Length: 145
Image (cartoon, rainbow, N blue to C red; front, side, top):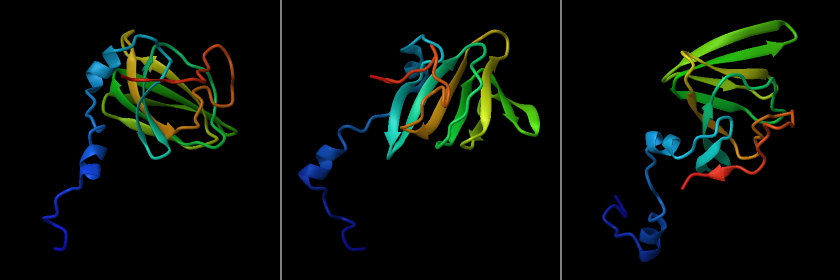
């Protein structure tokens, strides 16, 4: 194969110096605030955010963004609402749900009174409270490390 044994240039070697692994347990341990996502990484125009959830959030939707919730620890009840009614989806560690844009939802941390830790995958433009602005809205997200 052409180029298979080619040595990386100095510029290519330098470009990988910023790449680091992230230990999720350590990352979650680095902050205590609930409902205040932290940027753990970026993939193109998408943020990978860590969030601790405790109790209920608010009903909201996102006009332009889909978002994925991946449960790392604890349990999450995702309440969904549309013109046909309401339903809830229960998620446990290792499970995920994708919320399509425009779907009204309200996450609730459940399961024995403990926090729920989630990894959120969503466009960088996504506001945590979607179409609602209130005291829980976080406009300036903090990054880990």
